[in-house]
Image (cartoon, rainbow, N blue to C red; front, top):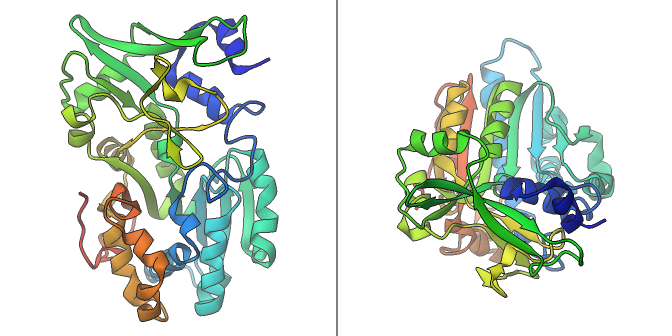
Length: 378
């Protein structure tokens, strides 16, 4: 059975349900079938793929956060949980721990690492990635810890969560559904899009909450799953911080004329397939065989977190996040000259397309090192 067969059996699917199958189905899903999808041999490139410098920079910030938590704790040796959500095979955590073991033994010895990853194949690859660093691993699971105190890091997680796609028509909001004739192998020629009533009133409520007025013909994505995820994570965090790194915009930019055709896209072999192929959206082709992603609405994610008791400590371009941390590295001049830093800072590339949202719970409003250069999101 193929994904197309499942669509025929279940009837028209929301785009969110289609993405759930195409990305996360245990048999067909793009992420479920491999331990690693990014890097030179993969389909897309992340800050982790640049090299270990990204992990070294994060280690500096995490160590500062641990000191802040310890200073405000009544326990003589407070717990410090490092939770990486969407951890893949554990490369980012390995880079963080390797830097800590070399330069900050106290931090290294305090870390209780929790790797959270939906893909069983990626979880199976984590022990080999961590190697001897696995001594700091407390848990590897597909779910967040029931409760934790410390820092949660999520690098390019929210953009891969399934999204609903809606389009405004003269008679009101419509939702986009995926349907098709599955008497032949699933393909973009057999899968097609249809419009229907919204599958949930939460979609209209989402736009109303933002006071967004879509013009007729505008097509946008709504990530209800991201809001569910941040609410759940906020409730599990007893005290500490979250660092969410992803590409996206504030709602005023995301739901505007500049993005009126939507941001849903697909990547294969480091190339976006473009908006359309053979009369169908490119992301409809080869379900399960390629990445599907959409830009993050940071306004709504931040509001959902704040409603659960978190405070926003910063939203800034990755460029400024990196510039704030570079001087704190053991050899900052070498790091600045390192080609990896140029890639992480590059305007128009990872530096400006990626935003860093920093949240806190029960920590006050500390002046964090990562926000010391500039707090600005372009």
